[in-house]
Length: 373
Ligand SMILES: *Cc1c(COP(=O)(O)O)cnc(C)c1O
Image 1 (cartoon, protein in one colour):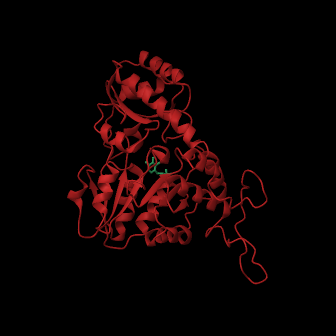
Image 2 (tube, protein in one colour):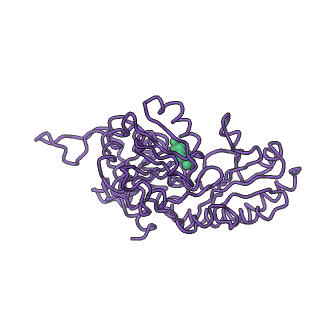
Image 3 (tube, helix red, strand yellow):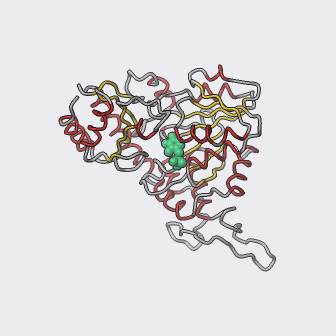
């Protein structure tokens, strides 16, 4: 089946025995034993397993082409489960331009647990390898400069070295990028973003190519640690994922058209979109992605005040963080990332929604016309 069909039909109907076309939401936290003391439905207690969650996990595993998935209360909880599945003394290579929230998690929390981290330039990860390297984390395209790293090259480096590779596929989604097929062991998602797609449900997932020993540890952290995605949030995420492929095509075409329009604008210094030929990741992106989605960033001519002025002059683009919803958002990344941010003061990050492209361009056109630059 193609990804559009998988999104609607995969999941195995774990919660569908009564015959509804759409699976019922299963809120029960506990499940009956039969006379022999067994669990006839296969479920005992919702932290360990829940039919609505099982359906979402099966669906996400099928969409990424993996064997299994574990859903968490957020993308951050999913990332945390990966780190908690390592052993003390393990060394981890992560991108120097990794999602800021996970960088902070590593620096403030995870590095206390006798794990070593190298923040690496992912065009040369081999320079950071150590005898105890156990995991390489990829995030491509990255945030907010949309840097692209080669999934095949990095996962090849990990092979024969007993190194696990994880790819944060939040920006590209399985519609446009297939990390497991390119050699990654695990995919991580903030399902809060494109997969949920409507900015109303937080969640995260780890999808594994094989149901092997490392994934079993992730599963233990999920069910014993308890950071599971609640049934209602699983239900909303399942509802969102059905339209992922259609939404992504519109995010993609709107994002590219807007980026091209900005690229030629006299009040714009630079546009970071991997689909523009002058982007350093253009060739690699073309080789490993079949589309880009709606994320990009740009430098407005001027500084912080022009950037903030421009944002405040937009009407359709909401001034808010996050991404992947049907509505367009714009944010000043340096303010969002706070102290330690390396984002330029004149950088604006855009999550292009699925409104009509003419309205989006008109909104920015008007905002530029009243912004001094
Ligand atoms: C949002 C995001 C995360 C964190 O996910 P939460 O659901 O907010 O915890 C991780 N990686 C990327 C690329 C993200 O955009």
